[in-house]
Image 1 (cartoon, rainbow, N blue to C red):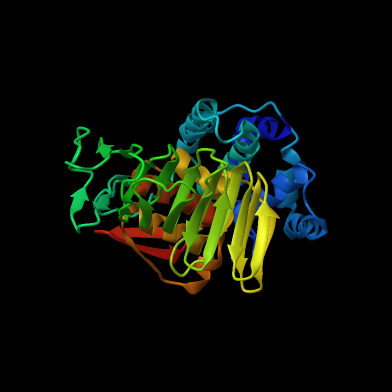
Image 2: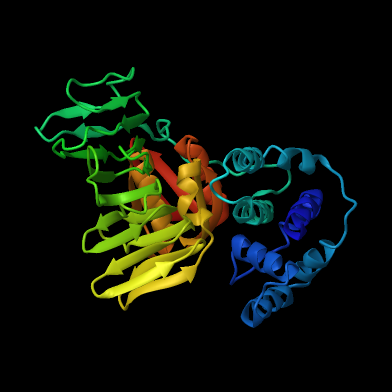
Length: 407
């Protein structure tokens, strides 16, 4: 594969990058941007504007051009290679490959090219900016270690009772209810015909996630700061739930009972399929389809999307586009997967998952773009360290507050 081969070549060329780091300067482009331009040109994916930008960088100095041309060589060795091999993203890559083999719901073809490209981009940017004369840049300025989120949620019953599912472990079944809980997953069972339907609410706080199996067998993954309202069993003619936040659904097929997800004044209708829905307050809503077919209704507009497509809310109405699905369902696979995503949106994800408050000292930081594949179950300091390398920013952690500055 071309992308993976380029990854190997870059690793072999680490001494070249290190040797040229002090000479390589640019008034206009960050190391991440330079790395991205080089990679796009290598893969034949650069447009005319990007090729012009790369040429501008090459013309800035003879050292830049010499560095670029040296990437064609293949026989280099040195101690820097050994140190680069210790970089955390390499361990992440191994974990990604293992996860891709185990998870069959998301097609393998969606994962491999992107994961490789992500690590190449981060690795090249890291080598350009942070390696020089054997000395490493200081990592994230940390206070206490902030651990990742975990399985926790609260179940609200029709009579007002609240059940802390993280505490109520051991598959304890409440009297008169048709569900069991093991501390990570809440499972419902079908009720007898004619029994009155009661609505339950599963609320996942910041710093949490939870799995749910509805009475019809539909599986739901709820992300942090999300809430799902649903019946304890479905009627004979329809299946309907109400979502706030983000969830991934694997819907049990039942042609006689269509399944729908209500997102305020928007509705997603399916028969049996796998899809992700994001509907956080104050954020444009998105429905991303993995397999099957869904219809999204908003006001008087309806769009039908197919696997690999997304229906997104815009000021002009619903927009349908083909997307890399891992960018939107990676959280379910325990990854933060970003492709040219606004750093401001990335920081919102981190706030919800790590239950922290992020303060951005310069507004332009929110408009930076990040491409990365990060471990969701890693302590936050490790994740912030990788983002520092990739986005050229600096983090400072004080308690549960994160301050972001330009590097």
